[in-house]
Length: 194
Image (cartoon, rainbow, N blue to C red; front, side, top):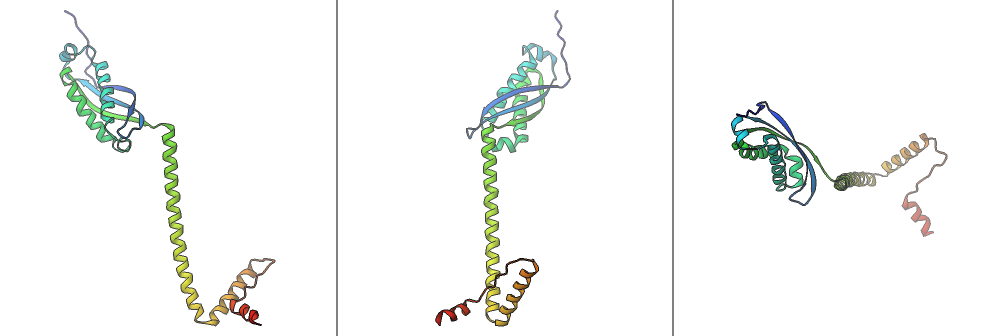
């Protein structure tokens, strides 16, 4: 009679990095780890030659099959649901071997460097576009406020004179060596007629 020693503790098996082509045709490298234990030592010896190696190979294949049906954005954002789906598939497949898959974790998803640069450029362009929209909205609000102020000042010549003096006072307080005197267009028009 031959005896084989079987470890009933939970074992962590690294799934080697898998190059996967996603549903949207992006190549990603994904690592995972599975935690499994043998619940029936007899079945794990009789029904499969090497339980750990077989479980690891099955996990690699399942990882490729499951992630091949997902878009890149789903892989990056829905790791938990992917891990639960893989756990269910693996647990069902390893049950006849006397192995229980307790947990599946996707450790790392690596994108190609060109794709990382493209995504960074896209994000930067999006931020710049939002900044331009915000600046344009600010200009629009400022122009409306200036128009309202101009309408109010146009109704009162004294307000225009006070604003003119306030501007000269501001220029003088900055200790500039050059002071520019803006002349009203009406005054220039009067000189043009003569």
